[in-house]
Each structure stands twice: as structure tokens, then as C-alpha cells.
Image (cartoon, rainbow, N blue to C red; front, side):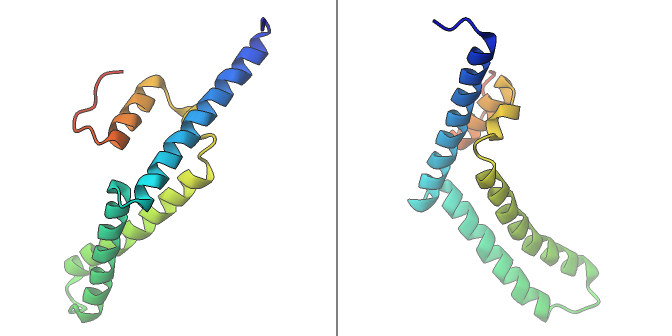
Length: 118
């Protein structure tokens, strides 16, 4: 029997790491099989590519239009960077989440339109 609080904490930390890895692998599998993550990335890439072409053709004095196009290009780049950080830190990603935040994240991953209370 385990009575040592440190052992219990270690087991809980390991359980949370495994949950984070499982959640990441589910997202990764969804991306490989054409899931919502793959579709989101594909749409963001298409929009970014179109914005880059439009930037070349846009009147250089239309600053509002240029900013909007630059934002679309940057959004895709930022999305890829964000996913990279999550991938690299998957083992510890959920350790910093509260139970409520974890429930919200799982709702989003599952595609639920309304987040249920934790």
C-alpha cells in the first residue's frame, strides 16, 4: 500500500501526463484522418496563400486592406507555431490546467457547441 504523499502526488502527475498525451494523440489522429483540425489547418493555409497573392496585387496606399491581408498570413503562421508548442509540451500541457479548464478543453476537442459546467 502507498501511504507516502509524494508517491501519490507522483502517480497523479503521471496520470495527468498520460491524459495530456492521449488527448494530443487523439488530435493528431484526427488531423491524419481528415478531422476538424486538419480541415482547420487546410482552410487557414488556403486563406494565407490567397492573402499573400492579394498582398502583391493590392494598391500600396490601401493600408487597411494590407493590414487585413497581413493578419490572415500571420494568423496561419501563429497557428502553426501554437500547435508546435503544444506538441513539444504535450507531456506537461494539462498539469497547469484546472479541472474546469480541462473540461472546457475536452468539450472543444469533442466539438461540443456549448461548454458544460465542470
